[in-house]
Image (cartoon, rainbow, N blue to C red):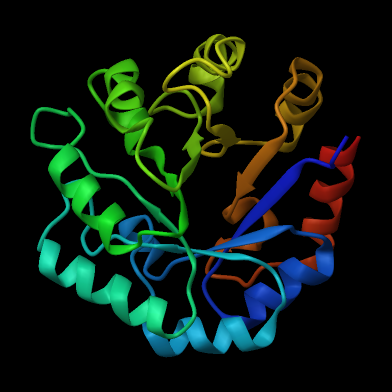
Length: 228
């Protein structure tokens, strides 16, 4: 049985190297955490790519919130990142009513055709998460949902996560569940015991929140808890 996936948010090469040193399996690359994570610049991606050997999932999001914004800009940034070597991404868009913006999601997914990608926590803020899964579940390349089960985080969403795990393999539920959002170390034993095998953190592996870099020792502590 393969070990669980541990994904860490990285903003800089320093973050990336610390996460790799501590035992992370994959990085999510973003900038501007004040807006909950936007698309990093191509130069920043290139520096991080040169600094580590880990797989990198790059955020495709150009504005705060879950509306897509300018699709041409999104697609251009995706193309520029791909030209620099990016081959995994993170995206997901909602309309004003909280339904999945399928046209936007399909358009950006088409721009990264051939790449694997995660539908992020827009699902937790949607009006109907089952409808989101049904709408996007068959899109090419989608292999992961990043979710805490609820907008309020893992504490609020645990029962939803368990119900979705129980449906693994059904249409809309073939993707891996990557748990992130309000995830704390004390959640891990119960979640691992329930059968979850992928976890995502950002601020939890930093000494002083987003004002401080990723701490390799904290990453190692989480790695040990996840491996159990």
